[in-house]
Length: 338
Image 1 (cartoon, rainbow, N blue to C red):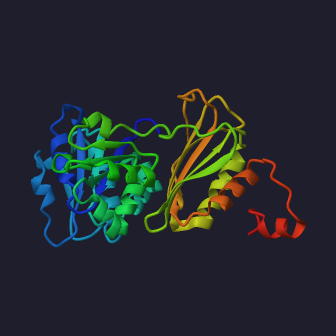
Image 2: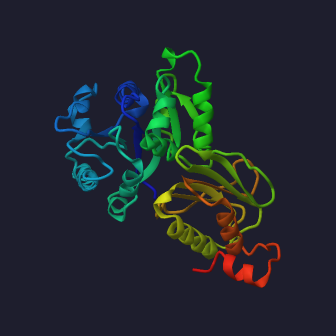
Image 3: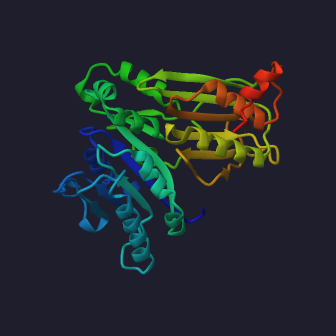
């Protein structure tokens, strides 16, 4: 999608420091030409007044949460911004950053940006940045299911308030287990061009040269992080069928899907696959395997995912042989049976 506006979501639970982060980053010349959309939950919006920049670069969406009542408002606002930019009524901004309410589920926000209407308006989802408070982060993850979802869908996780706590290792370990895709960074020390760099590749190392599925985590309100690996190329049509079946079976439980796929028609170039819940991003070819290992690596993060069933489903669509089973068991357990 050449020329599309990279659009980033900044999320994190209440008090994580989203506005403070944006105030620091928006003073960085690397973020010149950035349009900020601020969502607040409540009758009176204040966060947009705390943004240390000209008001023409900040749009407020108040009195609702982007994951519910305000989704239509977000779509209309972004479409209007693109139209006014094209007519020259606004500065030619080259990036959009959406700061969600601390109570917002980022999944529906991602789905809105991925909608066909916004794709036609010239937007593309470039990444999700999640802030976690170093002081209260572990307690928040224990108490608030929404904070788990915010971490699970992140492309980058930023820990704020590290200067207020002597040791963050336990929190870092938990975040890495919840989301093996996302690097965990210091919010105060990370530069803007790192935080808002588009996500182009998978952030986990190859686990094996064979096929298998590994669970990174199986806790935190049933959230599981799975990594599916295979050195056997899969046909493009079979991959689409697998992804469609996966989304239909797991529905809202599949919080995030991201991976590099070894496709039979073009094994030299990995296929970048991403999705959120029912919705898949447009797939894209990368020029080469960055680490030199031609191997499918799919990471799935969701609630109550069945690792064995997903592994079996992928094997069925990739034409990989499986161990013999009695006829009745084969009929009952066939992953392709509706």
